[in-house]
Image (cartoon, rainbow, N blue to C red; front, side, top):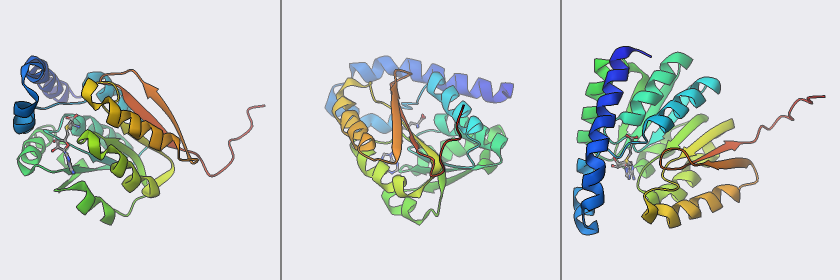
Length: 214
Ligand SMILES: C[S@@+](CC[C@H](N)C(=O)[O-])C[C@H]1O[C@@H](n2cnc3c(N)ncnc32)[C@H](O)[C@@H]1O
């Protein structure tokens, strides 16, 4: 990886580590009011895993729901650079997107990301697809409707990764509802992995039969 990109990712990780103790100490009402001050990134393990998934599945149409300040966007954009693909990133906050764009520009990755600023439910319906890989990392109550939004647009063998299946603990009821929904779809296969904040990885089954290994 480009050492400049590595350095930027590390600076996000340092900021996130410093913010973690503040996040834990805030009463829930104050946290809700100040939530946009914090990065709340997927973290280095999930970032690396996403990078590997995009490359190994040769994903070219990559969707990110919830960019925040651009930590996961940087990982996805670097992988999209290697596959010749593009990241469509959906984020509510225009100031967070400006911050992310500046970081992407500083490492020459801005050309691999198209931001859609605003509510994902207003913008994603007009994305044609098929989508090869999706990261769902927005507010947790939205995970189920987000999955319903992307599911019909998934490519054959398209992948959906959802973050925060285990942490924060308060999100677990929403995470469980999300996992139940994904597992109810006959065309999806999925696994939960205890990586970072806990991720769910789901893949649309191939419509062509798997070649016999015999
Ligand atoms: C946990 S943060 C994303 C962290 C980011 N993936 C990373 O690893 O750095 C969640 C983000 O989802 C965004 N978000 C929440 N609801 C949204 C919606 N309906 N449409 C688009 N973005 C949304 C929030 O503004 C917030 O920045």
